[in-house]
Image 1: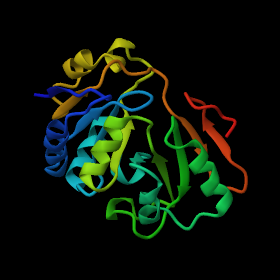
Image 2: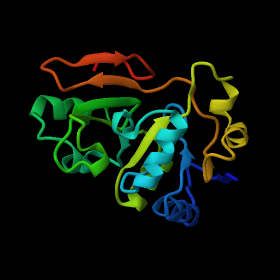
Image 3: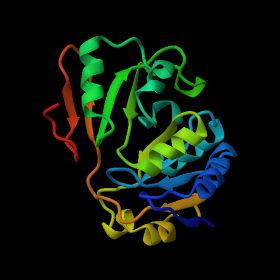
Image 4: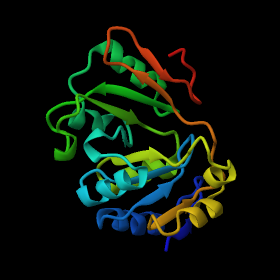
Length: 205
Protein backbone atom coordinates (compact mmCIF):
# COMPACT_ATOMS: atom_id res chain seq x y z
CA UNK A 1 0.00 0.00 0.00
CA UNK A 2 1.41 3.37 -1.02
CA UNK A 3 1.53 5.99 1.70
CA UNK A 4 0.45 9.47 0.58
CA UNK A 5 2.62 12.07 2.33
CA UNK A 6 1.85 15.79 1.97
CA UNK A 7 4.92 18.04 1.73
CA UNK A 8 4.75 21.77 1.02
CA UNK A 9 7.39 23.06 -1.38
CA UNK A 10 7.50 26.48 0.33
CA UNK A 11 8.18 24.90 3.73
CA UNK A 12 9.13 21.20 3.38
CA UNK A 13 9.01 19.07 6.53
CA UNK A 14 12.53 17.83 7.37
CA UNK A 15 11.02 15.03 9.43
CA UNK A 16 8.92 13.70 6.53
CA UNK A 17 11.81 14.09 4.06
CA UNK A 18 14.11 12.06 6.32
CA UNK A 19 11.42 9.38 6.68
CA UNK A 20 11.09 9.11 2.89
CA UNK A 21 14.89 9.00 2.47
CA UNK A 22 14.98 6.06 4.91
CA UNK A 23 12.41 4.27 2.72
CA UNK A 24 14.54 4.99 -0.38
CA UNK A 25 17.67 3.66 1.33
CA UNK A 26 15.77 0.47 2.21
CA UNK A 27 14.93 -0.12 -1.46
CA UNK A 28 11.57 1.65 -1.56
CA UNK A 29 10.03 3.30 -4.63
CA UNK A 30 8.81 6.89 -4.34
CA UNK A 31 6.68 9.03 -6.63
CA UNK A 32 7.66 12.65 -6.13
CA UNK A 33 7.02 16.11 -7.65
CA UNK A 34 9.40 17.80 -10.07
CA UNK A 35 9.19 21.00 -12.12
CA UNK A 36 7.46 18.97 -14.87
CA UNK A 37 5.50 15.73 -14.39
CA UNK A 38 5.64 13.57 -11.26
CA UNK A 39 8.59 11.17 -11.28
CA UNK A 40 8.98 7.57 -10.11
CA UNK A 41 12.35 7.17 -8.42
CA UNK A 42 14.64 5.06 -6.26
CA UNK A 43 18.13 5.19 -4.75
CA UNK A 44 20.76 4.93 -7.51
CA UNK A 45 22.76 2.51 -5.33
CA UNK A 46 19.94 0.01 -4.74
CA UNK A 47 19.94 -2.60 -7.52
CA UNK A 48 16.79 -4.36 -6.32
CA UNK A 49 14.85 -1.08 -6.39
CA UNK A 50 16.21 -0.33 -9.88
CA UNK A 51 15.07 -3.75 -11.04
CA UNK A 52 11.59 -3.08 -9.61
CA UNK A 53 11.27 0.14 -11.63
CA UNK A 54 12.48 -1.62 -14.79
CA UNK A 55 9.84 -4.35 -14.26
CA UNK A 56 7.10 -1.75 -13.78
CA UNK A 57 8.16 -0.05 -17.02
CA UNK A 58 8.41 -3.42 -18.80
CA UNK A 59 12.04 -3.01 -19.86
CA UNK A 60 15.39 -4.66 -19.18
CA UNK A 61 17.34 -2.68 -16.57
CA UNK A 62 20.57 -2.54 -18.60
CA UNK A 63 18.65 -1.08 -21.56
CA UNK A 64 16.63 1.44 -19.55
CA UNK A 65 17.10 5.15 -20.23
CA UNK A 66 16.40 6.42 -16.74
CA UNK A 67 17.39 9.92 -15.64
CA UNK A 68 19.80 10.64 -12.81
CA UNK A 69 18.15 13.33 -10.68
CA UNK A 70 20.83 15.44 -8.99
CA UNK A 71 20.61 18.20 -6.41
CA UNK A 72 22.92 20.43 -8.46
CA UNK A 73 25.88 20.18 -10.84
CA UNK A 74 28.31 19.11 -8.08
CA UNK A 75 27.18 15.45 -8.52
CA UNK A 76 28.19 15.37 -12.17
CA UNK A 77 31.83 14.28 -11.91
CA UNK A 78 30.69 11.09 -10.15
CA UNK A 79 28.87 9.81 -13.24
CA UNK A 80 29.78 12.03 -16.19
CA UNK A 81 33.01 12.16 -18.22
CA UNK A 82 35.02 15.40 -18.28
CA UNK A 83 32.95 18.13 -19.95
CA UNK A 84 34.25 20.98 -22.09
CA UNK A 85 33.56 24.53 -20.94
CA UNK A 86 30.84 25.14 -23.59
CA UNK A 87 28.81 22.13 -22.42
CA UNK A 88 29.24 23.10 -18.77
CA UNK A 89 28.04 26.66 -19.52
CA UNK A 90 24.88 25.27 -21.19
CA UNK A 91 24.17 23.16 -18.08
CA UNK A 92 24.85 26.05 -15.70
CA UNK A 93 22.60 28.37 -17.69
CA UNK A 94 19.64 25.99 -17.86
CA UNK A 95 19.74 24.03 -14.60
CA UNK A 96 17.86 23.78 -12.32
CA UNK A 97 15.13 23.61 -14.96
CA UNK A 98 12.76 21.43 -17.02
CA UNK A 99 15.50 19.66 -18.98
CA UNK A 100 17.10 16.24 -19.25
CA UNK A 101 20.60 16.58 -20.70
CA UNK A 102 22.24 13.51 -22.23
CA UNK A 103 25.93 13.50 -21.34
CA UNK A 104 28.84 11.07 -21.77
CA UNK A 105 29.01 8.59 -18.88
CA UNK A 106 32.22 7.66 -17.06
CA UNK A 107 33.57 4.44 -15.56
CA UNK A 108 32.18 5.20 -12.08
CA UNK A 109 28.58 4.44 -13.08
CA UNK A 110 26.76 1.94 -10.85
CA UNK A 111 27.45 -1.64 -12.00
CA UNK A 112 24.03 -2.10 -13.62
CA UNK A 113 24.74 0.86 -15.92
CA UNK A 114 28.37 -0.03 -16.70
CA UNK A 115 27.67 -0.70 -20.38
CA UNK A 116 25.96 2.64 -20.92
CA UNK A 117 27.94 5.23 -22.87
CA UNK A 118 25.64 8.11 -21.93
CA UNK A 119 23.52 9.25 -18.98
CA UNK A 120 20.52 11.55 -18.74
CA UNK A 121 20.99 14.21 -16.05
CA UNK A 122 18.10 16.13 -14.42
CA UNK A 123 18.23 18.94 -11.87
CA UNK A 124 14.56 19.83 -11.36
CA UNK A 125 13.63 23.31 -10.24
CA UNK A 126 11.64 21.87 -7.35
CA UNK A 127 12.68 22.20 -3.72
CA UNK A 128 11.18 18.85 -2.64
CA UNK A 129 13.07 16.92 -5.33
CA UNK A 130 16.32 18.76 -4.56
CA UNK A 131 16.04 18.18 -0.80
CA UNK A 132 15.26 14.48 -1.28
CA UNK A 133 18.51 14.06 -3.24
CA UNK A 134 20.43 16.20 -0.73
CA UNK A 135 19.27 14.10 2.24
CA UNK A 136 19.84 10.85 0.34
CA UNK A 137 23.41 11.89 -0.43
CA UNK A 138 23.37 10.65 -4.03
CA UNK A 139 21.15 10.92 -7.12
CA UNK A 140 17.74 9.35 -7.50
CA UNK A 141 17.26 7.23 -10.62
CA UNK A 142 14.00 8.41 -12.08
CA UNK A 143 11.44 7.96 -14.84
CA UNK A 144 8.28 9.89 -15.60
CA UNK A 145 4.93 8.40 -14.56
CA UNK A 146 3.26 10.05 -17.53
CA UNK A 147 1.93 7.75 -20.21
CA UNK A 148 0.55 8.99 -23.54
CA UNK A 149 -2.58 6.86 -22.99
CA UNK A 150 -3.18 8.04 -19.44
CA UNK A 151 -6.06 10.17 -18.27
CA UNK A 152 -4.29 13.45 -17.38
CA UNK A 153 -5.65 13.53 -13.81
CA UNK A 154 -3.90 10.22 -13.05
CA UNK A 155 -0.50 11.80 -13.67
CA UNK A 156 -1.14 15.27 -12.19
CA UNK A 157 -3.36 14.78 -9.11
CA UNK A 158 -1.34 13.19 -6.24
CA UNK A 159 -4.41 11.53 -4.69
CA UNK A 160 -5.31 9.83 -7.98
CA UNK A 161 -1.64 8.95 -8.56
CA UNK A 162 -1.59 7.22 -5.15
CA UNK A 163 -4.79 5.36 -6.05
CA UNK A 164 -3.39 4.14 -9.38
CA UNK A 165 0.09 3.23 -8.10
CA UNK A 166 -1.06 1.95 -4.70
CA UNK A 167 0.32 -1.59 -5.04
CA UNK A 168 3.47 -0.66 -6.99
CA UNK A 169 5.24 1.97 -4.87
CA UNK A 170 5.87 2.68 -1.19
CA UNK A 171 5.29 6.44 -1.06
CA UNK A 172 3.56 9.10 -3.14
CA UNK A 173 4.61 12.61 -2.13
CA UNK A 174 1.75 15.07 -2.47
CA UNK A 175 3.52 18.28 -3.48
CA UNK A 176 0.44 19.77 -5.14
CA UNK A 177 -0.82 19.30 -8.68
CA UNK A 178 1.88 18.32 -11.18
CA UNK A 179 2.40 19.42 -14.75
CA UNK A 180 1.45 17.26 -17.72
CA UNK A 181 4.37 18.28 -19.94
CA UNK A 182 7.59 16.26 -19.59
CA UNK A 183 11.12 17.68 -19.59
CA UNK A 184 12.85 18.72 -22.81
CA UNK A 185 15.56 16.18 -23.68
CA UNK A 186 18.75 17.50 -25.31
CA UNK A 187 21.78 15.44 -26.32
CA UNK A 188 25.05 17.21 -25.50
CA UNK A 189 27.38 14.35 -26.48
CA UNK A 190 27.91 15.66 -30.03
CA UNK A 191 29.64 18.87 -31.20
CA UNK A 192 26.21 20.53 -31.58
CA UNK A 193 23.31 20.13 -29.10
CA UNK A 194 20.59 17.86 -30.53
CA UNK A 195 16.93 18.11 -29.52
CA UNK A 196 15.64 14.60 -28.75
CA UNK A 197 12.25 15.53 -27.26
CA UNK A 198 10.53 18.89 -27.03
CA UNK A 199 8.97 19.28 -23.60
CA UNK A 200 8.45 22.09 -21.11
CA UNK A 201 11.90 23.67 -21.54
CA UNK A 202 12.66 25.86 -24.57
CA UNK A 203 14.80 24.17 -27.25
CA UNK A 204 16.71 27.44 -27.58
CA UNK A 205 19.42 26.79 -24.99
